[in-house]
Image 1 (cartoon, one colour):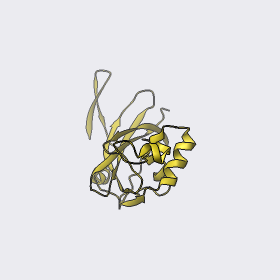
Image 2: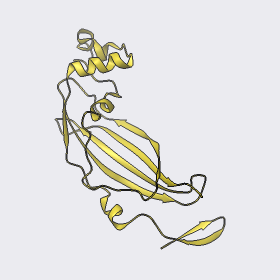
Image 3: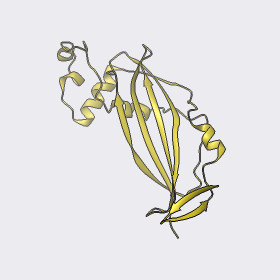
Image 4: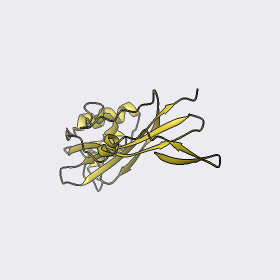
Length: 168
């Protein structure tokens, strides 16, 4: 049991975060490997309407410090839809309603044509909040690491999922 202070009163509350949920934190998925192809980058840049030559002009991109075409920052989102890393441990919320809490991206290295990107995903954090507008909430943060063929983290994605028990 945990004690929460709600409106100045101490109340006893059962946590919905189980030992199994806590044990799932940090357990990495099996890796998924992506080969970064020029055509995929060109199609993506065209689809989002980005005319920056570094994303779609081989000749101009070759004159940059990268020496060739690189992927727009949001490109990794498109490859994850092909086959995303599947968690080894499924964590299911006891609450029926869900909302997307958003995503954060950190980029460390450019994604270039010819790169091999290996992605793994894991539950990074889990918290709960009681009361409020949405009632009781379970907040889960998943991280996906995108590592290039040199063993360097090229990008890190943090996705927040919120499930909640609507107030009666």
